[in-house]
Amino acid sequence: MFVPCTPKGCIELLHRYGVDIKGKRAVVIGRSNIVGMPAALLLQREDATVTIVHSRTKNPEEITRQADIIISAVGQPNMVRGSWIKPGAVIIDVGINPVEDASSPRGYRLVGDVCYDEACKIAAAVTPVPGGVGPMTIAMLLSNTVSSAKRAYNFN
Ligand code: NAP
Image: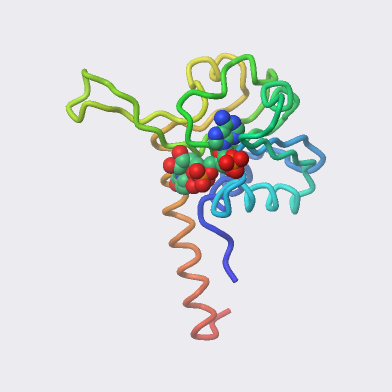
């Protein structure tokens, strides 16, 4: 009935920033039911050619380097390095990973699956962590809630 919020937010980000999806090569890293799989299906619905990379994939770096669009939903800090990225690729980093940081009051900070500093030098665009996909997930939850209310009360 409803598109899962996090992958829906990823596609919305691509649309809002005018990223062409049709005919592009997309790699989704991760195949969970709540993020990776629906993200791959949504990209395919937008006419991308989609490859899914998972923990048993033999050559993830080589496959990911072919992508025009990367959606990473793995849960491994800084796994996607600069060498995994095709120049000009667009990267959506879904990962939220705590790493030790003695300089932070909490003793840790949050980073994504993608090595942000390296990605910034190679990619055309990359979402930050935190502050990228997380807020989009909340926005899409509200969007789904409004759709649900419209259905329940027969609004157009
Ligand atoms: P999950 O259920 O643990 O799935 C992780 C996926 O990554 C699995 O498919 C796994 O492969 C794959 N994977 C693990 N290690 C890998 C490796 N070394 N190489 C390639 N693939 C690997 O996690 P999830 O719920 O999808 O969440 C993923 C990340 O997104 C987490 O950091 C989570 O906190 C974050 N997240 C963020 C939001 C947001 O709003 N920003 C929302 C949801 C989740 P296998 O299937 O082979 O095990």
